[in-house]
Length: 355
Image (cartoon, rainbow, N blue to C red; front, side, top):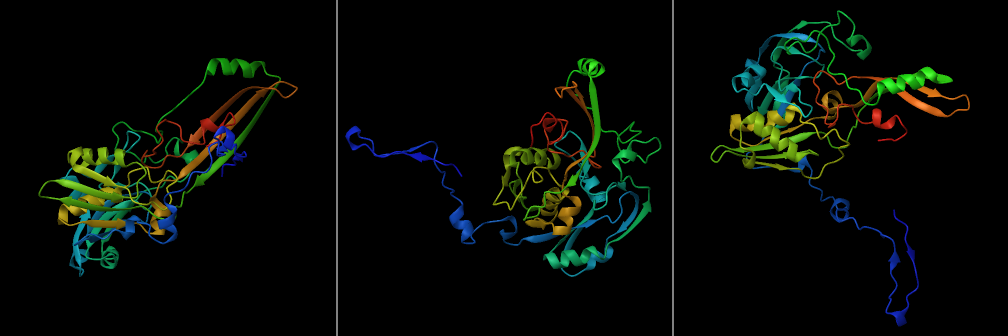
């Protein structure tokens, strides 16, 4: 709240008396929210709309041996069961991320994290779709998982991204900022050097509203309308044009009221793409909304740093230089929405600023 100072009116000077400063800005959205008139993603209902549900992997690392969807397809109300093999035929199995990596929309070769998307069911209602998930039979060939970022770079550690040609370890990139030589010289001449390891654990945004999408593809004119819980509709439109081959001017992204985002609704999740695929396959609008467990399991997280910090100082406590090394866990696919190599609350925070 902004505090303003008022002065008495001076009619003789033609001054009615006005507040000094910016004053309060009236919130325009409050009246409808306090009356329960918000319009969130799950409030959207389109004529003939179908519902999608995602089968997620119960294991962290495994080869996909086989997947049998016949019983799920026979379940009442089910119209389609989409697998990674189906997406491969449509050239939709992998999608680019906002960090110049690629991510699997559905598993085609192996599971790379617990909760990864394995199959997508489209049904007449969400209950039939969820029930059909239990009827999909998947056989996995278990592989050793990587659960500790410290051990991920050890010689002989299981390589998660063996889909990338020439990849022999789990290192994604090295990123450096500052003058290493000058910093080293300052440390070498410092009276006092203090070092400490600081672990900044993984945190989850946990918004009130989970992620979801309603995709409506018109096969007549080739237009796609996509309602999404997104904080970055323009970036999403560009990516869908690349993935689905739909001209960007024929894609309309609608971002309704969003019940919390905190950055985790910037990225592009496979569920969004699957809703689009489901609408293309069935010719009807398809809604996908994750539940709370799915949100905690597969929506992007924040932080997860192991930081080795050092301070070079004089005997009277004057700081001369700061140096740190950060090991950051970016997950199986580098899909962070951060535009720079380093993630928020890492190097921007080291000199004292915060994010």
